[in-house]
Length: 396
Image 1: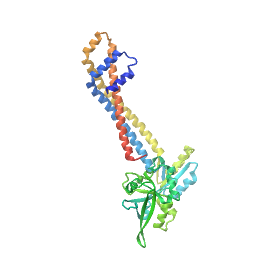
Image 2 (image 1 turned 180 degrees about the vertical axis):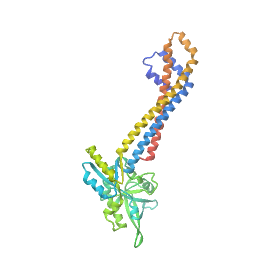
Image 3 (image 1 turned 90 degrees about the vertical axis):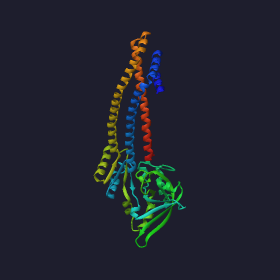
Image 4 (image 1 turned 180 degrees about the horizontal axis):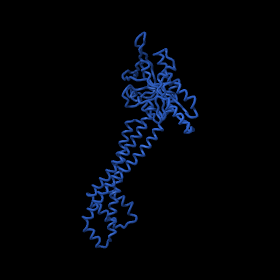
């Protein structure tokens, strides 16, 4: 604290004020150190607490926005009751308004009436999983910034699932890769079991190569660290259909994909004007079973932030105003106790205005040092708690 006060004196007063007054000012700060500490802590802790709350609030709001993006996969998500509505958007609004559209799919396990288990070749580590198909253009439309995987987080990683070599690969969720201790390019065994009407339970073993270990996958929280139920592994649509044909040979590709369809993610064209985008959103609002518009959420977030900024500013002003009475009382006691010293200074030629300036400087240094330390403490504590939230959320 004393070093901070010296720096403030050096910056504010040393280049224009007389050295004698600054010497007396430093002496007063040392003499009143114990009493001024109460005012210093009152100022700094009040400001630090308000600043910490403001930072935590802002980080929580931003975390909610990231969580919504990670849950829905993109800024514009829609789910219709029928496939015709998706086709209508594709025919009427693409590509001049809606630049790209991709589909999200759910677990294949419930529809297959099967259990899926993966284990390494030593058969020491096993993990129950759900198979999830991924559209080839998914990461090009979804929020690829929220995608985190090893060895690379490139949005072109999904494209490799649709190559000849990639049809025998899969992307593993974090819990699967941790349970099996896998690295990219390792091979694992997928055990598919289903209920056959004629022969009872049937099993099929197939080998898969690990394309990537996924930590965060937009639109699918089951790939994350803290998912409580069976984690997911991502495969291509043709690969899933091979497994689906084995479990249910009477199902067509269209029926299979429609039964697994969870919704679609839209990306609007940059050249689209606001009226055209509004037209699409009105259609979605009227006919969609479920939808999410990040632009609307951002507007609400901005309004909330504006209101809370006013609240925090007023709270800070009130707290500092109340602390001002502590400064006044502390300076009054300091002046009263040093009345004899002040008389000696006046006797050796220091005028009354110079005496006022010395104690005014002392109050200024005390308040500024308290504010600086309060801001520093609030920033450190606030961003430390925010970093913990970010680590827990596992967002890239």
